[in-house]
Length: 441
Image 1: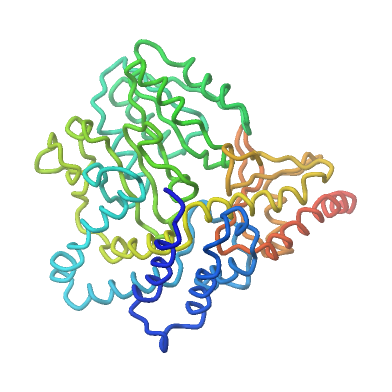
Image 2: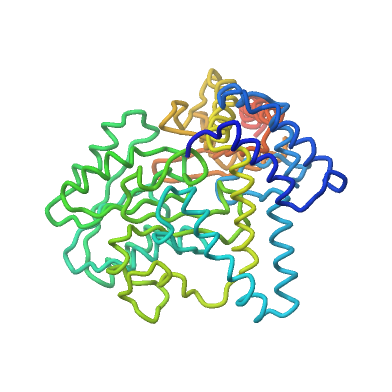
């Protein structure tokens, strides 16, 4: 995903208004201001723009997020900018004028252009991309569709997403495959160690390795390409869970060396909730069974994975506006801003006695997602989470696992440093609050 040059950047600015069919007289103030900010920002590098609060303020105004809380739980689902919301609502209204006509004869005609645009972002052939409703659907299509037999081994990780773990356990129970579990030591900034943890689990019976590009619990990024290359040398197929990576930071699917890839678009692309896609390498399509039965299960047409029955076309077709908004910002700008925001608050609290981070601050090992906890007597992640919400109306999410504990805090492009300063104040205040609360008992 290369940086926009000046011509393409200004074209993107123009599309913000022209694509919305708004004239300069009817265009809302937030859109006019954003358009102007974009025009004046093209000569700044992504690194320079990452800390330009004036620019990102105008990005924030494109969202309708609540001013009454600070949403730092953008990892599960993220809000859509107003242009995406409006497109979804408009398409929904159109559907209700005559559902069977407008859904199947009008809106469904937009699927092929959407496939083209998503493939362009992903850097793949459109004939390798199927539109789905979320990452779980896409990845379970792969997990349940692979022709594995009893005794075949699949390398999986204890920190993979629960839906994927459960899907693999079901295949183990049903089909007699063998799951080989690895346990990552995180956070890690040792790429060699991460690669070796996977490759040492490979045997002559290994058929598949399942890789989570970004571990959802703490934002750990894996060196997927290196692991994929090692797997392919042994004839092992590679599945990549990209739920938290696509449109979060820059890459193309072919660069990962993935045979299969699944993602949600309602996370980092900021599409409406209920959108995702499945990637299957062209030569792999024929042998992968669809999760929902197709007329020809052995067809080599990627569309065999889209026989999902009636689904919300109005959500699917609003993805196009999310793509426009993403490209308007620019992939590099977004990645640098998200990395800047995570490190902004972590740098300000890293010297507090007892604080612990479950996330790397180093490029290539972490981006937007941060995990924080305190090594204080009796304190649990839920205690810090409740304190931040009750005192500061900061919405995060607490995690308590065998090896991972803390509050996961995930900003997005609409998050401001002023909001993160409130987070910093809350984290700084927590140790004294906790000690005083224990004294009072």
